[in-house]
Length: 467
Image (cartoon, rainbow, N blue to C red; front, side, top):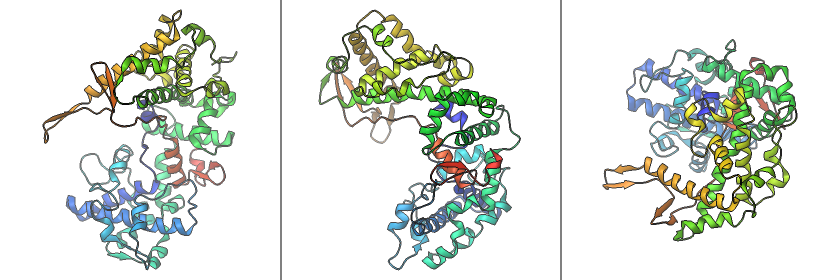
């Protein structure tokens, strides 16, 4: 996740629509111009988000829910729920704290870190535009918001009349053009700056969309970059320093996903008070009666004769295995890859910090453990690994423990509890991949016209900035 954060600066898993970057910049500029107090800025911001959300929700439904590639506006469900029978919305009611959004700052906290990094707003205080904020361009595209926020209610005719404020219109508006240039950062071609890193990531994704059919961004771009020979031979992709690093990171994500899946399977197998030895046997009994070495040797090839990654993680036989067996197989593949990759691919796979390489459960750590267990029972290894994961979960939970001053108790954030070698859980554990943020990124780029999607993803009308 740290590597993803470095390779996609300005986008997180909760930044969903391009237009909110510009909207928050507009409110910061207006608040500074008017010298508003903190509470007044919060009210103005919430009302502005409600206006854009209401216009967008109305247009989204009128368009048959066909805002291609874009996320729904923030507060969509609550805005529709509170719409009057005659149509329209009560801006004041929706903008009240805790209604369309719980935080006093509305949905701004989800964007603030990214907006500070992009220098749309300042870091120094709660209000104020940053030095990259183009107030004129943003006012040209979104200025009508400042008129509508003063109205208590907006009827359907008004919402329709101001359709240009919909989140979909930033792809053709002046504020979207400014944001597209800011994200694309023309001229920032090296990775020495965050703008240069972001530009390379954008150009890489855009290039893949030119080379192959992309319907689901994370799935299709990942597989192309990780396994297709053209991803290495293409002159555009090969010239981008970060392509290799992304390839390594994609391959590492299979291991991350496998650890999450294996732990969820183990944790959710705890039924009532469960002896830890019983949990370990739960995994061991599913595995073949063989050695660790034989198990590793039976896994699919990970590299071809030219030293390029092969799609071992998508081997049909491997994917047909029961969940824990499949997960352990994927982890062993990751442990093999850590000794095959080199250069920027290895940096993306392991991370740049030396201490991360031998972190418990990291691929290099696991490779060493598999070597030590090479001639020993795979089932015994599974029992040992289960104990290791349980112990680690308890250490991490204790490290995050905090005293609740109101109740005077120590709160330990964990679903799995260990007492006298007995395990119990108080809720289900979830699994899933760590986000590469590409789906969020693609939606944001579509919102500013850099990318577009009809049946498949492609370059948008402003795509010349990154193509």
